[in-house]
Length: 181
Image (tube, rainbow, N blue to C red):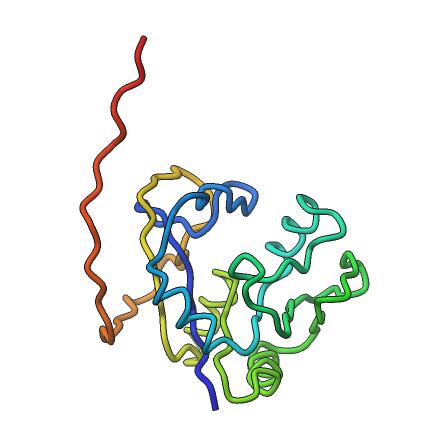
């Protein structure tokens, strides 16, 4: 059986998405080709949340099911929601109205031995609380957003400790040169 992985790019100031779930800040940010290829090769299904889905559906009418990884991966995509009846329909999306553990089971079954990737910070937080996340992959983007969707927003909880399984050296970053006046 595959792993449940939380895999994302994060800004230096701890945001996984910009205001309104925007992802345009990632444009031009590169991840090593080997890392990108490995993520695609081991991905079997995606589980996301309704707020992120709705934001995507509004920005790209008729294309909400755009697959992750720039379309290089295709497969089952599930959106967990308490209100599937009022979701913008999309042939590429299966809306689930069940508890989180069942949604993870459905996603893992659909992944057919590959990994289920979580594409929602709130769902990932809830999965952590239930002990359902097996791996966490994070890529730091050289940008500070200032606001948006926090990577892990759970005030009052104990720290979540992770054991490193792989480190990739990365170059240092510096701010861009000042704009001419």
